[in-house]
Amino acid sequence: MALPPPDAARILLVEDDDRLAPLVVRHLADSGFQVDWAADAAAADAHLRAHAVDLAVLDIMLPGEDGLSLCRRIRRDHDIGIIMVTARGQEADRIRGLDLGADDYLPKPYSLWELEARAKAVLRRCVRAGSAQPAPTIRQAGPFQIDASRRTATLHGQALDLTRTEFDLLARLAGDSGRVFSRDMLLECVRGGETDAFDRAVDTHISNLRRKIGDDPKTPTFIRTVWGIGYRFHPS
Amino acid sequence: MALPPPDAARILLVEDDDRLAPLVVRHLADSGFQVDWAADAAAADAHLRAHAVDLAVLDIMLPGEDGLSLCRRIRRDHDIGIIMVTARGQEADRIRGLDLGADDYLPKPYSLWELEARAKAVLRRCVRAGSAQPAPTIRQAGPFQIDASRRTATLHGQALDLTRTEFDLLARLAGDSGRVFSRDMLLECVRGGETDAFDRAVDTHISNLRRKIGDDPKTPTFIRTVWGIGYRFHPS
DNA sequence: TGCACGCCTGACGATAGCGTGAAACACCCG
DNA sequence: CGGGTGTTTCACGCTATCGTCAGGCGTGCA
Image (cartoon, rainbow over all chains, first blue to last red; front, side):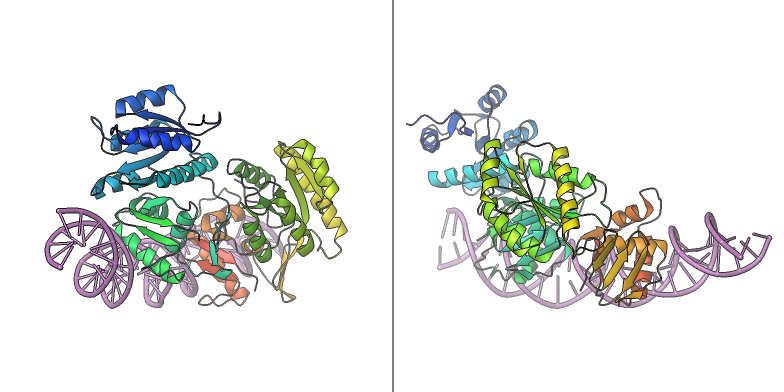
């Protein structure tokens, strides 16, 4: 196993399965990360207090305190990326994980390659954006160009006629390509926190938005449904 | 952040560093410039095609196409000032030798005041050199001509009889074509921040202004309503 | 002091856009 | 393959928002 470079991103894997964890550690380490492994929430907490970490990969199912409340606490106390890992058939948990501030989620079983790719994506976003999220006034996302101060969006140079909500949704999604957003997160972004609307209203806006940008909902190119979770934007 | 004056020079910052860029934008805006921020060359290109810009500040290190070829293309296609920002001091000499047509060079790290000073210097030179440049206080926006110092406005050469507020509104809106202004922003720049008027008062002035410039409120050409947000000026 | 002008406000339709429910459809899991 | 759950879409009622008008008020000027 190659020694990671001194400036390698530091990942903390929180996973109680002691057959799986060493494999993950090994793979991520081979990919150039500096990886530590905690088997439960208490160990993770202790490690986070003692060491700098850039990204936490949390299994939801943990002995003792579960990954959800750990996620919430990490998000509150540390400025790091979070990827939640969940066993299949835990839709509610997955959804809540995102709302607790996870940057991405990964259903089990996942390929190590997939985890590596997502870890890199999240780290890229974290390093560049930090916790604050200043957005360029002009942003290019694939064939889209989104101008925040003018509230205009173009696709292949063609101006889009979007409503307020549609524009806000597109700007939020495209502003963080690849990141998964739950409906509640999107609602909050779009309505500024206080609204009593059902999160299903987001579906309607996404539907309208897809129609306006010519995205076939059966095989969407840009705005992709993450089943049971929400939506993510894909620039290509 | 203070709103820049309507006749402010327009700067396009092309910088991919999400931590640095907002600081620069903020500082330049506070210095009285109108600033837009593009995170990569593609976004910058698109913006330059669509909007008037007086000065581009380019980072050499950009994702995708680098700042050097972007600089060359801007120099070829647009008659605007260019300041290149280089990552390291020694590169500045090399860049200078390449003669890409930049008007000035700034090595990183630079102070915001230094950038501000150089921007002003370059803009001064551009204004002096370009014979086609209108006098500083007079701005052309589509068929409108707005003279800030004399506080007069003409449409197709025909003088408009505007009240003080109407003129300020028109000057502010037309001074940054396409940009969306909320009623609060408009109120603030018209009343200088000290007023307790309802933002709906803006609607009345817009209504009166539209009548005077012959803009049908159902299908406005120049002053367009952005539903739920505010207003924007469109020169065509 | 009286008048003219411009600004603000409140009221009143008109309407764009939003949220909701229902129905059709797609997807996951056993 | 079938049940259950999540998603897409549609039409419709509702609300927030907008455009306009008339009236009151302050200000500047003659």
